[in-house]
Image (cartoon, rainbow, N blue to C red; front, side, top):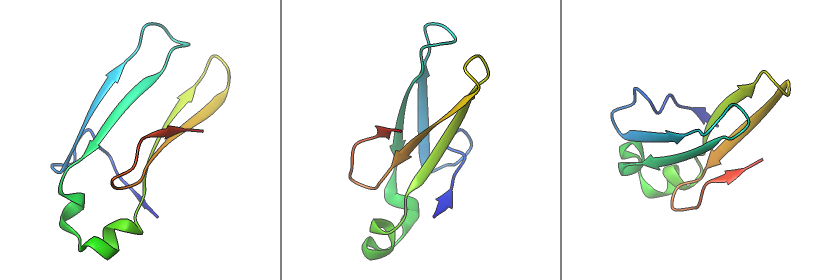
Length: 72
Protein backbone atom coordinates (compact mmCIF):
# COMPACT_ATOMS: atom_id res chain seq x y z
CA UNK A 1 0.00 0.00 0.00
CA UNK A 2 1.30 3.41 -0.94
CA UNK A 3 0.69 6.64 0.93
CA UNK A 4 0.36 9.80 -1.11
CA UNK A 5 0.21 13.49 -0.35
CA UNK A 6 -2.44 14.57 -2.82
CA UNK A 7 -1.92 18.23 -2.05
CA UNK A 8 1.57 18.23 -3.56
CA UNK A 9 1.54 15.29 -5.96
CA UNK A 10 1.49 16.43 -9.57
CA UNK A 11 -0.73 13.53 -10.71
CA UNK A 12 -3.39 14.11 -8.08
CA UNK A 13 -5.64 16.93 -7.00
CA UNK A 14 -7.73 17.33 -3.87
CA UNK A 15 -10.68 19.51 -3.02
CA UNK A 16 -11.70 19.70 0.62
CA UNK A 17 -15.05 21.00 1.86
CA UNK A 18 -15.58 21.72 5.53
CA UNK A 19 -18.53 23.51 7.10
CA UNK A 20 -17.27 23.19 10.68
CA UNK A 21 -14.89 21.07 12.74
CA UNK A 22 -17.34 18.16 12.83
CA UNK A 23 -18.05 18.08 9.11
CA UNK A 24 -15.46 16.46 6.91
CA UNK A 25 -15.81 15.86 3.19
CA UNK A 26 -13.02 15.21 0.76
CA UNK A 27 -13.02 14.55 -2.95
CA UNK A 28 -9.88 12.99 -4.35
CA UNK A 29 -9.09 12.66 -8.02
CA UNK A 30 -6.14 10.53 -9.04
CA UNK A 31 -4.93 11.37 -12.52
CA UNK A 32 -3.06 8.93 -14.74
CA UNK A 33 -2.75 6.43 -11.88
CA UNK A 34 0.81 7.61 -11.20
CA UNK A 35 1.66 6.48 -14.74
CA UNK A 36 1.70 2.88 -13.60
CA UNK A 37 0.78 -0.08 -15.71
CA UNK A 38 -2.85 -1.04 -15.39
CA UNK A 39 -2.19 -4.18 -13.38
CA UNK A 40 0.06 -2.29 -10.98
CA UNK A 41 -2.43 0.54 -10.53
CA UNK A 42 -5.25 -1.88 -9.76
CA UNK A 43 -3.29 -3.23 -6.80
CA UNK A 44 -2.45 0.22 -5.44
CA UNK A 45 -4.69 2.15 -3.08
CA UNK A 46 -4.30 5.70 -1.83
CA UNK A 47 -4.98 6.53 1.81
CA UNK A 48 -5.64 10.01 3.15
CA UNK A 49 -6.07 10.46 6.88
CA UNK A 50 -7.45 13.35 8.91
CA UNK A 51 -7.37 13.34 12.68
CA UNK A 52 -10.37 14.91 14.34
CA UNK A 53 -8.98 16.31 17.57
CA UNK A 54 -12.41 17.12 18.93
CA UNK A 55 -13.57 13.51 18.85
CA UNK A 56 -10.05 12.08 19.18
CA UNK A 57 -10.69 9.88 16.20
CA UNK A 58 -9.01 9.21 12.87
CA UNK A 59 -11.01 8.90 9.68
CA UNK A 60 -9.43 7.39 6.60
CA UNK A 61 -10.45 7.98 3.03
CA UNK A 62 -9.38 5.12 0.79
CA UNK A 63 -9.37 5.64 -2.95
CA UNK A 64 -8.95 2.66 -5.24
CA UNK A 65 -8.25 3.34 -8.91
CA UNK A 66 -11.47 3.56 -10.94
CA UNK A 67 -13.48 3.21 -7.73
CA UNK A 68 -15.48 5.59 -5.58
CA UNK A 69 -14.09 7.19 -2.46
CA UNK A 70 -15.22 5.37 0.67
CA UNK A 71 -15.03 6.64 4.24
CA UNK A 72 -14.24 4.32 7.12
